[in-house]
Length: 134
Length: 374
Image (cartoon, rainbow over all chains, first blue to last red; front, side, top):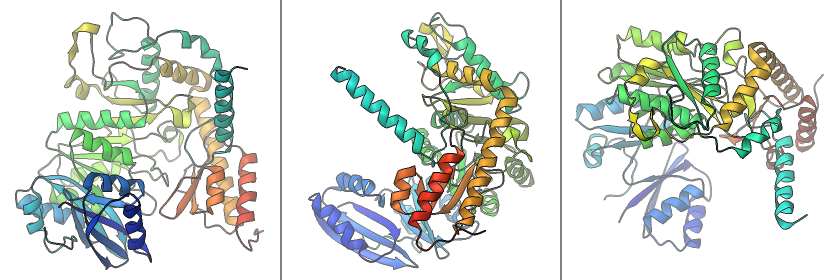
């Protein structure tokens, strides 16, 4: 089962809205887990229709990150991302892209795409925001 | 009137109304190119490289070369070492700049600020280029401390800097002279700088102080939009690059008898004529005047909003006036782009003081208990 992480500014009713959106489209949510960190919600979903769900979330203007990309949380300060990318490089992991998703209250949610996700998860374990085991 | 005519008339009326009302997009609307209508009866196609000969002659490539030369001069391109063509807009121009950078530095990493237009991420995906996003300041300008720290840790990979010369929301401008100094300080000799000057390319040369954005400041390639500040009924743009970079990726396309270094091959032959006509109409002095008028109007918008008690602001010498997101009805009526709690008005040519006054009145009516300040 593939996983999707939604990163959003936390608010009341966020998960309910998300659930309704997917329910209306007939998507079956196998699991949902959420955590709030300093005003940013990280919602991890496992669904039966992966590609369709990603499209639905995108069209609903949610920031949805596919399983192929890691979601991490780091302090929002100059060089913060550089240190992450350096850690990956020192572990011989090729970086495909590093993109900021949200910056709130001194923290930054970041999407990291590499050529070896399993190894990246290990290297960046302390920063990874996915809340379920694979 | 038959059904087809009625349908087209309806579409035209709707589009003209929408054109007259929008205030939040960087697209000039003070043009009339109907005198070029005869060209619609010709299958113009500027196949391939505008600077090489072609067996296909139903084109406007001679005029396109003049357009490119005009912008090369405007952006202080080095004598004898520039090349370019008319693209279908800023995104293609940026794609081309990044493509050149990738060919020169396949192992390079692209650095760009979080305020960068979304199309750049799409281009990076398309080109499969490694990239790291850098923080932006509130002004929209790149955070130089974050860039410095990141470059310092990745000195082994040639940096490809994607500089914004006017971000989408706030018109923040990255200073490429400052970035070059940074690269020198870090002793990074292999690097590439692309300037995305989609909106500000035809504006920045006339500003005082002149922003550091062009070839003389260290850019390797520059993207300029044709339909933004200049104005065009068809989206278009210009890409300019140092010729020595382009020569490295030139490839022969035998069947059209020319060297094609462009992205699309078959290319619009009408938009170079539109840009050429605009250049004839304005010239450099006309553009300068146009810039000054737009800046005056931006200052007027900012002043009116502040008087209304709206926390409006703009970057130095910017046409973009930024303010807290306005009510949905106002946003919809005036087509105000809104993101992360901010809306903006952009005073491109064609936006009039009269429309601004109507917008302010409309906004005032939607702000509870407002009091215009003296």
